[in-house]
Amino acid sequence: MAVTASEKKLLIGGEWVETGDWVEVRSPYSGDLVGRVAKAGAAEARRAVDAAEAAMREPLPAHKRAEILVRVAGFLGRRHDEVAQTISAEAGKPLKAAKVEAARAMSTFTMAAVEARKLAGEMVPMDASQAGEGKLAFTLRLPIGVVGAISPFNFPLNLVAHKIAPALAAGCAVVLKPASQTPFSALLLAELETEAGLPPGWLNVLVGPASEIGDVLVEDERVRAITFTGSSEVGWKLAERAPRKRVKLELGNATPVIVEADSDLDDAAAKLAANAFSFAGQSCISVQRIYVHRSRYDDLLGRFLPKVEALVVGDPGDETTDVGPLIDGDARDRVLAWIGEARDAGAEILTGGELTAIDGGAELLRPTVIGNPAPDLKVACEEVFGPVCTVTAYDTLDEAIELANGTRYGLQAGIFTSNVKTALDAAHRLEFGGVTINEAPTFRADQMPYGGVKDSGNTREGPAYAVRELTEDRLVVIDL
Ligand code: NAP
Image 1: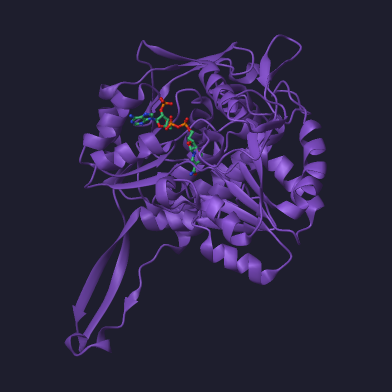
Image 2: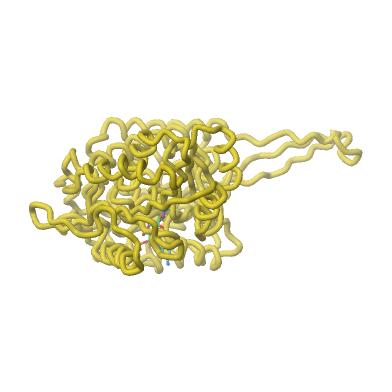
């Protein structure tokens, strides 16, 4: 973990800046100091917007933007271990998962570079109407302007990549505010951008009080778009406060999966066990609610529970660890309270449900499976964001779909079945931004259009889709 036990400055207008105040980052596992970062406030946020606006006065051509993005992808590959250790140290993410995240960020940058080179408007078929006869028209696809980007703690590298790589591909300068608990991965990425030749002002990184920096991004009219990933509560408030900006939201979920009677239970059990507890369930699409046909309930549990109990709980810096700590004590207490609520209401705790002491003193929440909770319990409809999933028996597919849809969220859902018709029926009726078939709904490849409906958001990320959101059409009409 020594790799990030350091002091870092903010990046504003191409300069690394100190402010005299610091934000301390501690390991969610050991509580040890990981490092400290210069603390920004409103004044630094305004300077960052000034720098971004100034940078955009000299647009970077698409080939240069693409080359920089490709170089960053290459640096991420060469410094893979250091990047993974940075993620693991600050987020408490098991090294195995941190390595996957580091590799995915390479893919995000690579895909964004492709989009930078493809960015183009389209021809308008003018003689399709009488009014258009004798005219030629086409659209230019132009950057929307300065982008404010706000990212969460749980994927401190790849979700920052999903903010800055498409924005730069689109030709927009960025003011980034990463999560205060995990700023080091973002600052490492900023170093790589600078090394890759990104000119001053195109990327500015601020770490500090969310509301102070957020207020500048909301209130400054030069910030034309805000791209936010985090909780629904914070995200929708930002959108309400900035009605004239494009505010793009990637928010939470309470991820359901349906396991039909005709599905391959070995396959389902293996995929669900791996994807309900990775990073202690702190993924927006962590498998949370499993609905299994009543005729296979015991069969599924017989396969699923041993796999859950075999997961290694422990030090995230250890290569063998599957499940590490929650991000902080408050998160742990909240998840324990939700488990307690389910237990008190008569739901069965099938495994876990309590803390386990690890050598060295940390107490971690064991992977927890809850049987047949009532649908209005928090664990069955709200986002747990912890190492907890529920397993509920159903009798008909209609009932399963109604249960799966019984949440304010709608990011991704899944179904296991060997019947194509059932799978496609469910894909139409599950009210989510994405539906996986015979795959855990935790699956994401970085070029996919990824995002939610209902309380889960209002956009799709994945470089091609994010570039579209961060650009505007300008119509050009020529009289021939
Ligand atoms: P969060 O508390 O909403 O924080 C996210 C970011 O918003 C952080 O940078 C935070 O800064 C900032 N923030 C907080 N209050 C703000 C305000 N008033 N104005 C401006 N910014 C503000 O979320 P989190 O706990 O880090 O992340 C977990 C949530 O993110 C979960 O709900 C999860 O499902 C969701 N998520 C969604 C996706 C997706 O793609 N759909 C992906 C990952 C996570 P500070 O850190 O300084 O407080």
